[in-house]
Image (cartoon, rainbow, N blue to C red; front, side):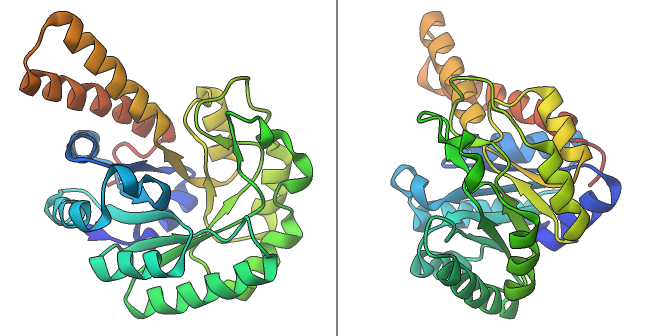
Length: 278
């Protein structure tokens, strides 16, 4: 069933588990995600990000995402991740996405508040939800996730939520996008402080590559949504190489890729604690 973030994150926050967002740029990833969630009886969030549109055009993949969510036997949020421009966010809303992340975190803080608030007003009018971000979630390849003075502060989190009315808040506590070159240093104490003063569900970006213990710690201390993409790419790449070595046909290669991505997602659903929560 097609739902928005409030339908899945409020329960996750109450019961201390997290719901995974798995960006799905093609039907291989889409099929893997939906079938994994159904097998695990788990809510799930699927979607794409603005930086991924060159690899899966929004107009092409949106109908598939929406229809797959509607047909699913578990709650499925269709989420537009890291929307960098208002025009593309509005396009995703019109395409039927039930959740939008407007990400103005890299720009002027006042502009981020203004634009996020405008996005909230538009999305709520259509029954969709909005995730915002403050602080700096780094890029693993450059190692800038350890820039502690760019982490989210509790004071910033309170002010941002109050000013924008977001339904979920992505916080910077030491994670990074992409594959980590060194073990990330997560500021769990900072996460605890933010959770203590903000009732809005909190989001962890840069989840791929974290250890099981990292996930358990962040979820236990307030994270209700975790973003995963790179791990799915790694699983798909491994499956493709394996299929080539086995001399499989194109269609068998495709099925093998779906199966490996699905297994990677199932492991995350179990780890996040969302299995059996649909």
